[in-house]
Length: 335
Image (tube, rainbow, N blue to C red; front, side, top):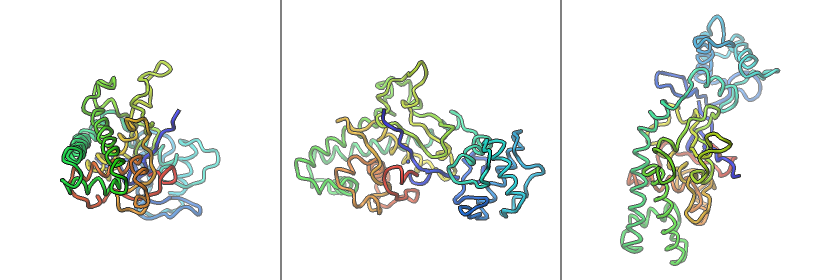
């Protein structure tokens, strides 16, 4: 059985954190807070953890500080003791290390208590991101159709986009023709999942997505999961959903960023019509450090290349969006 692909919290498949606020965003810190060599104790990060620990008490859970911590951004002995107490009581760590790290079990447990997420929260985020993803996929299909029907060179803008993201101009004419058909089929199938989900045995586009309360990252996806059985061992099959973790609910995940995430995950979720899985060979925009070296063959099997192409078709701009960051492929670059 294929493993789940993990999307990071920054850019696209790694853990995130900021002050919980009225928007209900995930708790996010940039660097570890607490004791030991890993801790950086940046004032803004310390404030996030101090506030979150106080809210444990507000939510009626054990393991929070009494009296409340002063949210001053200073990691003093009271804050340190509160971190250790929370780890002992809520995370069930026999020998707490006294450090809260982005994406690790202590901050995940804080998230589960302070900013629990459910299907209603997910639907609110999807209501803003899904329409943009649909429009981007339609624009991607139009772009590819233009090149296929008019022929290479007759639409320089459409040709340029394909070459930027997939390096089709590095292939032979016959290989370019085959690649364009593959891209047309793949983007069309991605669009079908969210436009005609009934074709995949789903009762609505929302059914393709689910909240993963145990995931501090942005998303988990099973390669070609849309073709998995809907029921397994008498219950819902998680592989049939793009599972969105706490990172997806962070305030930094704007509708545009959300759409980019969905495009990335949909490419994993469907794979290619020829049965090839779309993986993470590199993350970032077409001109980023870990994308530039990728061959056409690798880009045709790379999720961020699909997301980037569709997003450029949506915005009609080759300028890199601010939320896209570059990272190596595989688990080492998981965001």
